[in-house]
Image 1 (tube, rainbow, N blue to C red):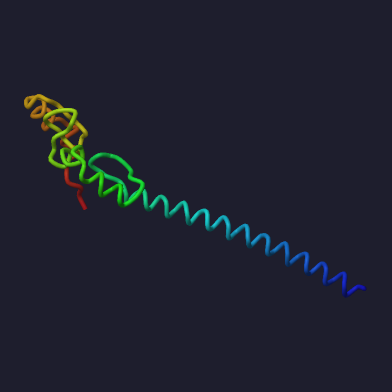
Image 2 (image 1 turned 90 degrees about the horizontal axis):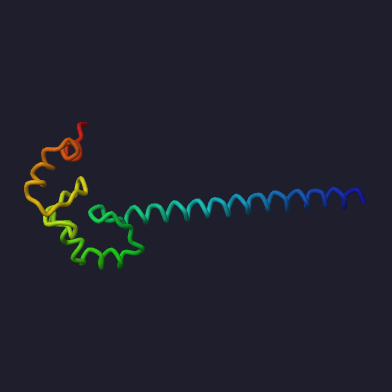
Length: 114
């Protein structure tokens, strides 16, 4: 009788440990899934257009859009002249020349020192 009670206690403890391990595994899987999603978001992000894309196919389609191509060429839909680094757009050449001399533009385009 005492042996049966000890075995039941051992079984109960083993079930408790299994339950804890299953919970740890579930939490680890959730963390792994979240990390993979974040990594995918970083990979599927267009720096020029500042947009996240849901899939590689969507990225390929996006890369063929006029907006994306214009931003790559430095011309924005917001204006005839654009500065990708500063997200600045204007229709006036003189304003663009002034922008290129601004502190914001200079700091955004300054090469990083090692």
